[in-house]
Structures are given as C-alpha cells and as structure tokens.
Image 1 (spheres, each protein chain N blue to C red):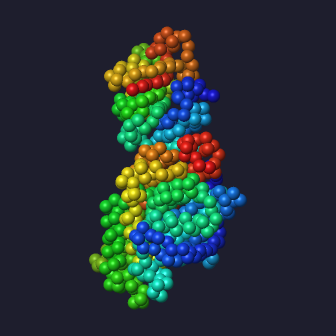
Image 2: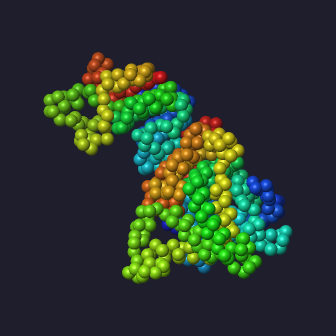
Image 3: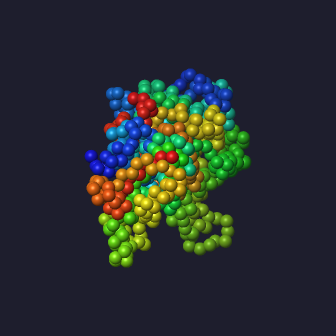
Length: 388
Length: 196
C-alpha cells in the first residue's frame, strides 16, 4: 500500500465545456444547450486508460481537490485526492465536474434561459441521476476518454456511480459506492421535504423567482442546511464537538443562541445560504428522492444490477444514520445476487454521514487497495466479467 | 505450497463459484483462484483482513458469521468453505444448515477436541485443555463450541447431511498410521467434505 503523503495537487483551475446538442431528460423535457464546469487532476496516460470520475453529493461541485488561486481552503475532498492519497493523482487522471442544475458554474437555475433571456430560476428542469450521468458521458466524449478506470462517489454521488454502472456498463471498470443507498427511505424523503418547505415558505422565495425581485430566501436556505447538517453528523460527534457548552457561560433566558451547537448550526446555515442557490437545492434534493434504478426492472435490484460489469467496492460508516450501513448492504446483496465482483466494508467512524470526506485509516487503505492498478486482478475477476 | 491449502484444494472442483466463510486475509481464496480458477467471495469480520483481501484483488464482504447467511439465496454457490471457524460461532448447527442451503457442497475444517492431549489435559490435570492449537484460557477463548469428530458426524447425521469425504491430519496437515487407526484420538484437525 502506498505511503500517505499529505501533498496537495497545488493550484488548480476550472474549465468550461459548452454543449450544443440538446440533452433529453427523464422528465420528458430537455435542455437545448448547456455548459459543464470541471477540473482535472493528474495526467491522462498515453493509453488513455487511467481516467477516474468523481461524482459529487448534494452540495458538492467540481472543485474536489487542490487550491484555487488565492484560496486558503482546498477542494471538498482534498483529504482523499492527491499525490499518494487514496485517490492517487500519480496514478489516475481525475475528472471532477459540477452537475447540471447546480450553482457553481455548470448550467443551472442561476443561468440565463436562452428562450426567455432571463435566469431559469424555478423553470430549470428537475434533473434525474440518469440525466447527470448522461451529461457526464458527453463530457467524457469531449475529453476523449474511452472508459473510466473507476467512477467514485459518496452519498448522492454513489447513486451516480450505480447509474453509471448499469447505463454504461462497458465504460466503467471499477465502481466505488460510498455511504450511499439503492434508493431513499420515507424518512430520508421526509428530511428533504422539510428542507424544501423551509425554502419555499420563506417570504423571499417568490415561487423561485427571487432573483428577479433582487432578493433570495436566506432564512429558508439556512434552515434547510441546519436540518441537513444535523443529519450528516452523528449523535456522538455532536456530543463530542459541542456537548452542552454555552456560548457565554450562562443561560440568557431568551431565544438567542445559548448553546454552542446553536451558534454552530446558525453559522453553517449562514455560510451555506450565501454560496448556494435555493432553486438548485430544491432540485438536487428532488433528484435524490426520485432515484430508484429498479423502476425499469420490476423493482428488482438484482435484475437491475445484472447489467453492470464493473468491479464494485461498497463502503459504509458505522455512525452514519442518514445512509446507514444497512442501506449499503442492500446494494451489496443485490450485487451478490447478480454474481458481480464486489467487496464491502463498514468503516468504524464517529463522524456520521460526513465520515466519507475524512481520511480514516481503514477507509484510505481500502480505497488504495481497491484502486491500485491491475496487478493480479485479471486472473481473479469473475470470469465473463472481464472486458479488458 | 502450504499443506493445508494443498489438502483443501484437492477437494475443490475447478472453476467453481465459492464462498469462503471466515476468509481471513484472503490467502486461501487467492490460492484457490490461481490453482482452481474459482470465482466468488470471501467473508470476513475483521476490517484489516478485509483490506488485505481486497489488496490481493479478491472479492471480500465484511460480515459477522453469527448474523447468518440470510442475505444469500439458495443454491447460489457451487461450494462453501469454512476453515477453522465453526467452533467460534454462536450457532454452528444453524450455520451448517445455512451453508447447505446456499450450496449443495461444503468443506468444513475444525480442531478435534477429542485429541488425546486434550483428553489427558482434562482427564489427568482436571483443567480446561490448552495447547498450541487452543491457546486461550477458558474465559476468553473465541472457541466456544468445540467438538470431536464423533460429535460433528452425529450433527451431520441429524441434519441429514452426507459426509462425502473426511481427511484427518495432525497440526502440520500430515497423516500418519496412528491417525488412520484411531482418528478421533490422534487427529488434530478434520477436513470434512459435506454434501446435501
């Protein structure tokens, strides 16, 4: 296993790819033209055989690793992507993009709708995971990448990995599905609905046309994020981080933030509301709710996953209650039933759902082991599943 | 080539789809893949060993064997192997039944509690036997369901499972004339090939 250097990739800069060919969507609508913003780390080798795609989660974006010029904070998964890290840029050419409907540079609700000349706002079509994967496939073509050596994603990103593996089976050699689920539970949809209600009932929301009114639903976004944030942490990690610590050392007997956890959540909500678009948040949570790859396969996960040919790694985290280990095990069970190459590990970690972002030892070693370039695998893969 | 792997390998049909319960760091599975071109999965509870198995390039699923095999469907494997883990399970009899549900054939190996050294340890010294093969104190041993060959065969009979073949060896996985004469007294490790 490789040593864990802490080097970063250094300065990175995003690129934009424009597409003119309309993208037909699951909803029946389509986007006539669009931009996708992306970053790449590492070098594509001569054989073009080392490309690795990162699929981002709900609030993620293309800036996964390295630093933007002048920034002090690195990309969201810098802990795991870089030279000598779990996703080793000395080995892989890493491609990371911002999904359509997002708000970090790819076409989304804040972009100009060419048909009206105004921003899309709430008129931007609701994206499905398969639509994102299709757009990622188009980006792959423009980058002249023949197949992905690996597709990697956590949470909503893991759903994109599953979708990749069944929609483009020949183009994915290894699939890494982290802290994800084959579809959301009612509880999970419930959390998303509360978040959407928080946004849409904010008086500044204006049915999603807040930009035209020169305002935005800051309070609603804050609430949505505060709720989300609680579900991404574990009870233990919150206890450890805040306990019942008071801000000023005494109770103030008013409704200001008394406890540290309150001011932390307010701060997180505030930060988030200033950098994330409300319509994007609404749309991304819908994509989560709608995801169920078995709908085209009589609700049968084994049948659905039978289409895949990739070698899978499924990872969960012990204290994750938003996407608990039992949900990952459903994916594993489906893959076992379909006789696919799959390995699975539940990582002991106190951080809850957010654990997938941390460089936890067993997790890093597992990713490193699974993603190491072919050495003895050819002889060890299930026969008939190799498509070298 | 290691003797234990060689012995087990002799019982594994080429190209079979195999589940290795308690696969450890994947050494046996890797060996059988190279020698017998098997496919399938190892199952292991220890995260570090799962990582090692994955590092060898084999499919490894983390799971507690005590949770059973309910996540696997009937007849989904050609062969199930469980080497030296049976005596550590909460319900060995249920595990044997489960193994025979998901596969027509199974290979089970375990240490023989009827070996003469353990008999004498308990019989003469009056203490719970400890040895190289069973190095734990009675209160912290993972080996909670030890048995003799006779006990195991009685269980198979009651579960209607056929013993297709039995190999009895010493701790170096060798056979001797004493072993052949009185296996339940001189045998240290048994390798059972079971069939439903």
